[in-house]
Image 1: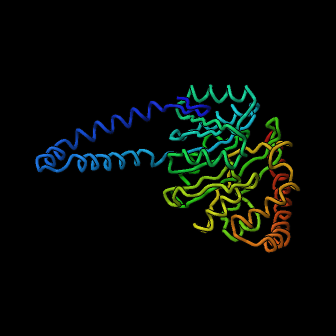
Image 2: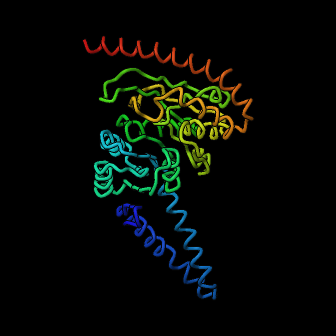
Image 3: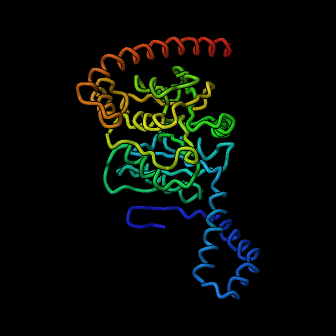
Length: 330
């Protein structure tokens, strides 16, 4: 179905289940509604009762649904690989919500149209102008119907059992937000290193530097509510989102098994580290409400030393990872 540039795929299997559920509800409640009408209860009252019952049933249907959030912009080279890694998950109860940030690459647009036409779980929205990945992610979050919100960029990919393992982990731990270790790859998919997720991440630790990989993060709207969106800045929005969530729930828990693959591209939004300085400072101001002076002091006094320590650990972990990989290949 198309409205201007916005295209939404009709999810026939879900609508069929909803219709069947409505019929079953009407059949099971026919005596109830007859009794109400005999007592001259108003039709609006009976109708509202039906709506409440039906809404509860529909909500239960989405109890385990995972809404996967993906922004796209001229990413034809890796887009199909990313989409396939999501649709081929062993955990099938998912929807993929892609927001295209005004791509002018025909190949990208053709890939999006093909997948939205082939799989009812794929829902694509096309923006009329470019706003940045944070805005595009928020547009997908607005459309999400699932209990769980997960993230994957259009050049990254997941291990086939990522959702199955991570949702089971969250249910077992009863945690509101989780993330995992992930493997770093070059533009051709060759593995370069590993980022090991800390088992537990507190809000205070997260204020010093972001150690939650966005492509691995999942949060539970049943525990947190559907009220968290990325701040309106061009970069580092994922860090801002996680700070807002952890300020509420306190801790994030991690699976230390690598379940995702991050593509480290030279021309990506996050590749210019010096260019990110002002956005890191903006996070302290816009998300945490710090003054400009406090934000600058926090950045140079806490963020920079913590970030350098993280880079050293990542380098050592990646060396160990390569050595283990080489030893198993021999």
